[in-house]
Length: 223
Image (cartoon, rainbow, N blue to C red; front, side):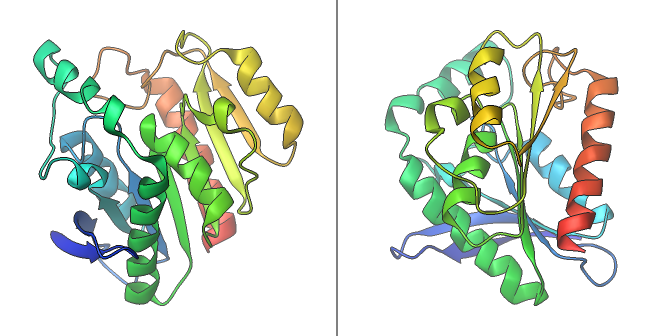
């Protein structure tokens, strides 16, 4: 079952969130953080799939501060629209809005809360691991992570990257691993956005293996 709910951030901002509920009692709460394309069909599918694994999945609309209802596809026009948000982005407020989603999840389930983010969301997951009270954090191809190496993760953290991803230099990520050897970092013979089955870069085998690792990690730390 899924629904849209309204969240309130600490600064009073209200934002939409897509919530996917499991069939039975939730194992834990899991915040799903969008790519730069908004809480679109792919991100809603991701939330739905984690709900089937037993999690209360909450996907906050981080772009509501700039434009309500951002739901973009992957054609050229939508890509241009997505990139137009880049100069406006406030990473501090992304963390604020992510916290609102995590708190909603905790209050709703009475259980632990984790986070999984993709691309832009992978970087947000890294920041959230450092700044928020989370029990587990997973980031997929978060290109901004190496630039935020000073953000020391407090929660158990796992990262996934593609070896063919020209947007994220491996040597930069290796420095993150050297700084934080406790962070689990995995590489795949895949390009950027290899988990997104709506994009040409989708790599089924890499996506499957990354999901298996993620689920095992979440089970260990969220129950």
